[in-house]
Amino acid sequence: MHQVDNNIPAKPMWSAIFAIAVSVGSLITAELLPASLLTPMAQELGITQGMAGQSLTVTALAAIFASLFAASLTRRIDRRLVVMGYSVLLIVSSLLAAFGPGFGLMLFGRVLLGLALGGFWSMAASLTMRLAPPADVPKALSMVFGGVSVALVIAAPAGSYLGAILGWRGVFVVSAVLGVICLAWQARTLPRMPAQGSGGAGAVFAVFKRPGVPLAMLAIFAVFAGQFAFFSYMRPFFENVSGFGVQGVSLLLLLFGVANCIGTSLSPVFLKTSLKLTLALGPLVLACCAAGMLLAGPSPAATVLLVAAWGFVFGTVPVGWSTWVTRELGDDAENAGGLQVAVIQLANTAGAAIGGLVLDSAGARAPIMVAGLLLGATFLIVATCVSAAPGVAAGGQRH
Image (cartoon, rainbow, N blue to C red; front, side, top):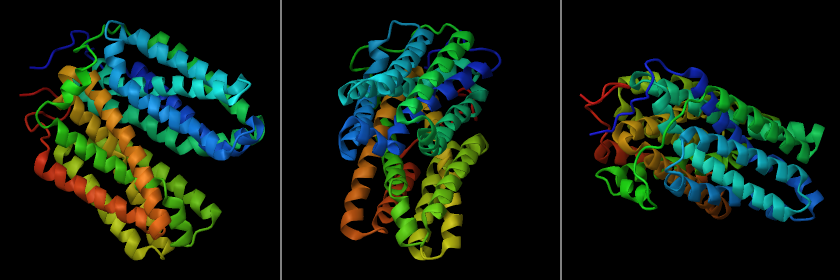
C-alpha cells in the first residue's frame, strides 16, 4: 500500500509547481553554460579547452552522487528547506565561477552545482506529487519537465549571446541572479513539506531490488543513452550527410528544441490514453526516425521533418517515465526519483561516449545507427517486460 501524504492539496499549487520548474530549468541552464563559453574561459584561465570542458564532467559526476544519496542524507529535513538549500548552492557555484581567481575554485563551484542539480532533479517528481492532487500530477510533471526542455533550448545560445556582451564571467553573474529569483520564489510559494519515505544510505538500492524496477531502469537507460548518442552528434550528421551549413544547423537545433517543448507540454494527453503505450511507442517512433535519417539523410527536407518529429516525440519520454515512477513507486518517490536521475545521468554519459567512439571510427551516420538500436531495444523491453500500472486511472489512485 502506498503511504498517503495528508498535506496533498485539494487543488494544484501551480505557483509552487512553476517555482520547481523554473528552479530545475535554472540548474540545468547553469550546468550547460560552459559548453558555449569554453573558448573565452580557457583563454582567461590559462587552460586548454579540454580542461575547461571538465567543468561539465565534474558537475555530472556530482549530480550522480547527489541523486543517489541526497534523499537519505537529508531525510530528517523539511523538503522546503532542502529545495531552498539547493538554490543557495546554485548561487554560490555561479558566484565562484564569476569571481573566483582560478580554475580550482571554479571546479569546486561546479561540484556544488552538481550536488544541487542531482539532488533537486531527483526530488522533482516527489515534490510535484505533494503539490498537486493525483489527477493533476501528469500535467504538473509536464510543466516541470517543460522547464528542463526550455533550459536545453536556451542554455547554449543564451550563454554564447550573453558571453559576447557581458563576458563569460558576466554570464555566471546572470546565473547567480536566476538563483536568487528561484530562492525568493520558493520562499514565497512552497509550503512546509516534512520528509517522507525510507532513509538510510541503502534506500535507493532497496528501490532497485523491487519487482519490475531493474527492467524499468534498463529501459530508462536505453532510451536516454540512445537519445544522447543522437543529440550529442547531430551536428556532424547535419553537416556531413544532410549538407547543412552553420546557420542551417543552428535552425535545426532550435527546431528540435521547440518541438521538444511542444511534445513535453502535450504529453499529458498521451499519458491519459495509456501510460504503457506512450512509454513503448515513443522509442519505437524515435527508432523509425533514426532509420529515416539513415535512409533519407541527404535530403534536407526529410531531415527537417524527422528532426521535428524526434524532438516532439522525445518530449513525452521524461514526463512518461516520471509519471511511471510516481504511480509504481509513489510510496518511496524520493528514493525512486534519485535512482531514476542517476540512471539518466549514467545513460547520458554512456550515450555520448559510445556515440563519440563510433563517430570517430565509422563516420557521421554511426551515432544515429547506435541511437536507433538502443531506442528499438527500449521498445522491446517496455512492450514485453515493463508493467505500467494497469490498475491506475490517468493521474489517479489505484483501484
